[in-house]
Image (cartoon, rainbow, N blue to C red; front, side):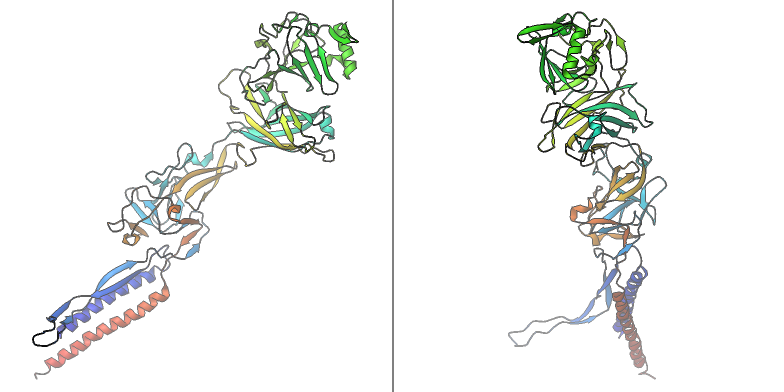
Length: 608
């Protein structure tokens, strides 16, 4: 009789525990990322009054089963539905995160690491990403000096540190010219089509390189001149810096030398080829009138074709010899200049022999290095505006002397287009070069150059087509993919978190910067984690250990969603159903006690 009383008491206790579990579930129905629990019962123990016996072949009797009387019930296990995903709650807060998958955020109180599915985060006063409920730091991986994630032991993510609040400036390295050059454009035929290129130095200051595209008398051949470089105040910087454009491998700051057999260019883009030999003849190639052979010794008084040296610097040019009807005709320098000007359409003979020297690099690509002399006087004029007399511009080897070297802002490249297709053929006579380099260097020797990197300007997208007399050519920083644009100093305007946990800062200079990555923890038996309150779990011997590093959430197919939170996975319909059955179970067990008590009362009443 007493056994039934104790069984009833055990039933009451276990059903009370189940009510506690159900009550906790219902209480946390709106708790972020709460995982519901369930309880299972097991028999407590049994009193065996008769053991089982087997069949007896001798007597022929059958076996009997054991006789056992149960002594009640006990709580067998309380399980957590930790892998069951909760519904999504939209918040719109960029720092609210929801994990899809079986992973956990890693947070720390400064001493120990804990794990949570609660992604309700915020940024504290010093820029740390932390839990809103208790201020525990969210842990993850930081970036190295190259801006790459280093997957090492997790650290707190100080995403809004002082150094992350700004984005360093970058120098422009790439640029692109696009649009149409129309040969009938009055600007191209006149002063030149102006093309501006905005770019940045490595300090973040902005500048504008001003080019002019000029046509020539040769169909499809144009000259792109660099006219000036302006700062943000629209003032030229060429009083302090030299600028040039070139193709090939020459680099700014390397003295180039004019050599024998070098190519020279007139200021209007015509070319003169020096081929010193026994007679030292020079061939002038005019795109309109063809080739003319000149004798250097008569063009330059005292010119030595073997050494390439000018012995009489005071003579801008000497007499002019040419062949007519098999006879050699020699003219004075003035008459020669006038005759040449008249023959080839120059308005003023002083335009003659105003030469721009171009040196050749290892790839035989001509690079403009300076203006040597101006016809009509005996004074050499350099591009920086200074003049000098009695200077020998060539050394004994035919090379340009130091006094003769001037890097000019008005340097140019020849641009040629295919007249059948209108596409770019090449630059400076090369068919495999479609980009030129813009370099800027201090006039004074200095290792501190904010324009340390050359800007490679790709012209392959330009076309030479009919556009009703209007050219649309323009230049923008960056290549076709937007790389190499350069930028000014930027201030952070926002933070975004990608679905792989990578955190990026956005800046008002158009740049983004990787700030870190949220790491997650994964366990072989997540149900073995131990609840610690505050939506936290800790690792146990049955859950598996945390290695201190964590994993990328995408490694097991999971991902993070921003602006949303994971809701509780409590199912109210199931909880209320369990509530009813638990109530009935409790009620039935209480009846066992009352009925047993009545039976005992009847037993006691046998003696009156």
